Length: 196
Image (cartoon, rainbow, N blue to C red; front, side, top):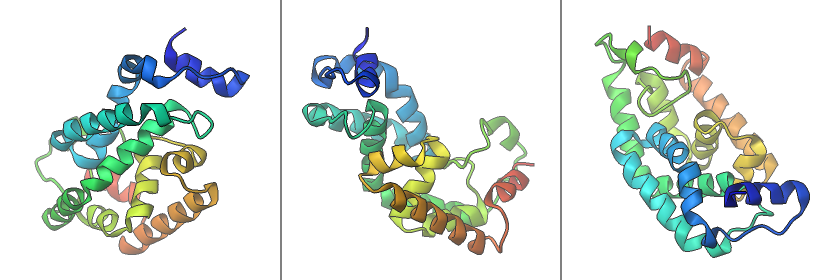
């Protein structure tokens, strides 16, 4: 059994979890690509490599403090990644605001670039990018963990160290602000129109 499976199984059976410190290479092997995709969606591909490396460096440094009772290894890593990305917030915000000024990409190559229909740093354009950039950090982090990492409310709460209710209220406020900023339109419909 791998360290990851044993850590995850701890939650179901109550068995004592193994220490991530002893099998950290397996943590990297299992979750590196997923965390990198999340970072790329938040920051773009260039900044994602640095953010992902920093995330796993921080996780390695904190490996002895991992608490399986607070969440799965995956959730723990998303929490660290969100904090690392938060440190790069000025860069992210500047990029989103620049995309808002530029508007939709008119090259026609957008279709080839669209991998999924979720909000991503590469697909945000125009008003949506500006609206996401203007959200308070806590609301933006919750929104993007739900939209990009596909985490549940419970997982977002564990990743950010906030209550379940706070996740729901931040997500609701973020959605309301996005709708208002977009003139009452659905942000996902706006995104689809921009992609053809």
